[in-house]
Length: 218
Image (cartoon, rainbow, N blue to C red; front, side):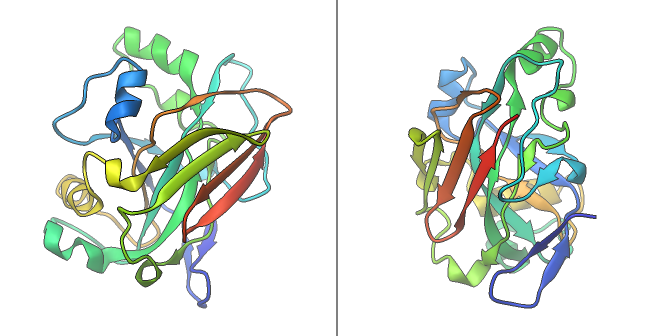
């Protein structure tokens, strides 16, 4: 089991399913040559893909192109089914920092064949994930800066205000399809600037007022 804490409290959650959004920042969609979607595009990572601050991302032998994607993570604190957008905040336990590691060469090859691409997103170590700050500690989750650097060189520098689909809408959309449970995590998409890392690199990811991660690559 993978556990994450709510910082400053005695609350702990066992991480469940990790529901991720693709193409939720327009500039990121454009940089990969994708259309901006009218509805959230969802995929999942298993809890077994989660690692903690200071742990190492290990690039699988079947990939030669592993990309970073810094994302705001939303921790679900109560069972959510068919939640109205104006009630969605009631189900959020906290906010954290995640890096959605993506085997871009594998993903592109599978997409070209019309096949699912979970093996490009859900491999072991594919989801560095911080502990969470309480939801109430974040005044506006759509006014946060997201940054990711590789070996000290800033590669991503965005703001959550640029999300196409807002967090309340995302929770309403997902919970109408399948039930969200305590410990489930939503990764809300990444801004532009994604790119490759290689063995020996060190990533640092930071979201203002939320937290940070330092992750080496092997």
